[in-house]
Image (cartoon, rainbow, N blue to C red; front, side, top):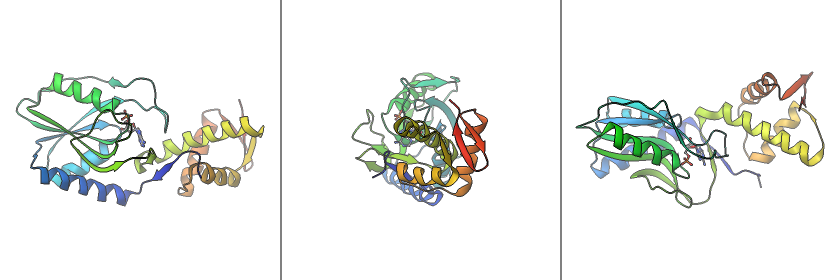
Length: 225
Ligand code: AMP
């Protein structure tokens, strides 16, 4: 059993799920005139929904809650608040997933109050129904057991954070401070239950060296702090 439940999501699944979500929206009879992507996770699904629903208007708003993979920060914040006039528009607010729901609650309230669309609905690929404080109007998949969806657009960021946490924790537990590249890959599979393309491990480790967390000697990586 991996320590953190992770579902590795492929680009093909993202397209399939977004198309499925578009069909749910179509069947409901709701015809949005503008799509609003919640940055950053909503960008790809929002763009695909524009394609599948034939919507030309695409805006974005950045509401952020989870600053680290599989670790929520305290409070959702709205970055770069700005105003646009959406009077007369039917809006569709799109994100990848509703987990706690904090991100979308903040974005929804802001858009409704400051942008004033005639109608506002929410669509996400996933809805974690067991924990979410908000149920999206449209979703493609209801998730009952919490899992981290490792979407392809955040793969390097997630792998980097996963490796950092894994090495720090492993070091605390065993006292080990140095690992070979192959050992890190093996531990990663054990901890997260997934494997990613080779270049992700390489780029993630390069980032951890650049950030000063690790020191590289030959093919070995050593914790510096
Ligand atoms: P929340 O405010 O808790 O609903 O978190 C929403 C945002 O955090 C989403 O837009 C995702 O980008 C990210 N996120 C939260 N939980 C997960 C998860 N279980 N898997 C993948 N991404 C997540």
